[in-house]
Every structure is written in C-alpha cells, then in structure tokens.
Image (cartoon, each protein chain N blue to C red):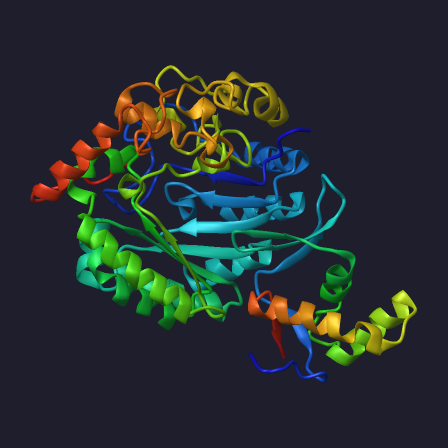
Length: 93
Length: 357
C-alpha cells in the first residue's frame, strides 16, 4: 500500500458509522457485518475523518488535544489511518 | 449482564418472489399475523437497549413490506446499524433513495448464479437480469454492496465466474455460503449437497480469490459443515450474541430454531425482549455448557464450538441435546457419513421449490 499523503482528506467509507455503544458508553465503529471497539486515539481520528480535514490537520488537532508536539504522535496516527484504510473503513478524497 | 446480543435478525415477512430450494425459512410456516410497523419499532428500541448494534432486515423478501422505509427510520432512531438482506426484486432507484434517506446503512443482495439461465432456474422466476440492474444502483447511491451467493451442487462449479460477477459489480463484501441444510434446504438436501470433489475445488478457488481481492472485496467462504471433522460454532453459542424475531413476533435464538421439536418460543407481543433474552426457557435451553452430554461436556473445544448446531442435532438424530453429528467424536457421526456416501453416489433429481405461506 502506498504511503499516506499528509495533505489528503480521509473520510469514513460509505456504510461506516461512528457512534457510542448504549451498553458500555464507549465509541464503536459499525460497518457491514462488523463492529470495532475504538480506543481514544482511534476515536479522535475517526471523528475527524470527515472528508474536509487533512491528515496533517488531524495530527495537529490530536497534538493539541494531548498537549504534545505533532511529531510525537504522527507515526501512531499514520499507522491507525493505514489500518483503517486496509480494512476499507476510510477512503481518501 | 452476562450475555449481550450484538445482532438482531428481523424476518419481516415470509412472502418472497423467489422459490430457491435452499431457503432456510421453515418449510412449514407458523400461523399468525405479521408484526405491525409500530410493533417492529418497539422491538428495535428494546433490542438497542439490550445492546444490539446490528439489525438485519430480512424475510422472505423484506421489500414486500410496504412500510420498509418506516421500519428503517425506526431502526435509525433506535441507533441500530441496518442492513437490508434482499433478493432486490422490487428495488428501483426511487425506492433505494427512499431507504437511504430513511437511514439504511448497507445492502446485501442474493445471487443464485453468475448468469441468467442458471440463476433463474434456481430462483424459479426471471430474476437475474433484474438483480444486475438493482445491484448496480447500490454503489451509485452511495451504499456499500454485499453479494450473498448460496452454494450447492447446481452452482458451485461456477464459483470463479460468480466471484468475477461480484468484482464487476463493485461489491465490498462477497459471502460464498455453502447451503445449510435447514428448512427447505433440509427437504432438498439430496438435490443440493455437492460432492467432496466439488467442495475441495471450491475451497481452493475461494482461498485464491480471498488473497487476490484483499483490501478490495472481503471474500467470506462459509464451509459446508457436513464435510468438516468438527462442528461449526453455531451462532457463537446459543443465546450469546444473536437473536431472531420471526414475522409473527416469536423470538428465536437462531433463525432455524423452530426445527427443534417441543421447544416453545415466546413472543414480543406478550413479553419484553429483555425478559425473553435473559429469562425465557428457549434462550436458556442450551446456554453455557451445563446442558451438554458427553463427549461435549468434557471436551476442550466445548467453549469454542459449543457442541455445534442444536438444529442439526435435532434434524439428524431426533435429539437437540445430542453432540452435533458432524463432529468426528460424536456417537452418531455415522449419520453424516451415510448422507455423504449416498449423495456422492446419487444423481440429483428435481428439488421442491420454496413456496409462500
């Protein structure tokens, strides 16, 4: 898979829905025949996968939220986006 | 709460324009009135409160319900992820857009074969060309498309062409499901069960396609369990993750559970879904491991395959508590071996087409 372009704008793929689980209160990602329980980072990233925000902007927003330098979490964020892309849960616009 | 259901299969009606001989609907339909729009809406809300995330809108043919868009809207309001499980007959652009606007999340269309002559012969009606038209609309309208193809003796040799069809339609998911022998499928087993050579070749083709299409189309190959040495982990355990509500409101731990003699099912018309899930006799009949006979009770696999399928045990041995006879350790494995020996030798005759109630 080619590297992720930092200026591209990821969006949740058609039929992929982000919501809170009524039982646990935790965020889950729903898609055809599947459920993914999300950790805080994945949840924050998917919240920003709206087709308008660039990968760079997502990294910057996370850095601000966690009060660290963007470079500290860039690799983790790219890995998370790569995993989501591999499962076709996000698309790049 | 110990158990929490993740998925609800809502069988909205037994009416269907197709006559597929492998249909898993009961061959003898229970009598009663279909649930109303308001009753289904209540069931969806109760299911969501219980923890259900996924809703399958199925049948019969769910498009036969004129209130389908209202039901989808009710599911969305309850917070359920809704998947329409359909033949697609009756799905045009206008209806599809209406369903999408109501909140439908995804669509699964059945195909009987890769081409019209065989597909229509299996469906018992002219369906294939109409399915192609409907399937093309789904990605166009921005919904993810799953193809489901039930495999049997009559179409399993076309597997490579069936996979090519799914690719050409842009399906994100392809379910290649060997027939499960319940309902009409059980009636027609002699005509439908493929030979071992067919099954092995299909397994090779499916595995190759799964690897080749990774990242593009998820290929799911459901094994023909009669040819396995160990049973399937049916429903991930009885009353553990799934529930089905049939058209007249009875709640079943599995869609085929009415094939178990003397097991009584409670209705959403008489009880809250929470009580039925947690406390009803049917949902507790085979929960956990205490009900198990030997060898299951002491088997290291007992929490992995749960003793296999209760419906299959009932249909083949007459005793729903028996070890699934698919298991090589089952005292009655010979029943499965006899089926395989006879089917491999016999030339298939005519099957009984599925009928509506």
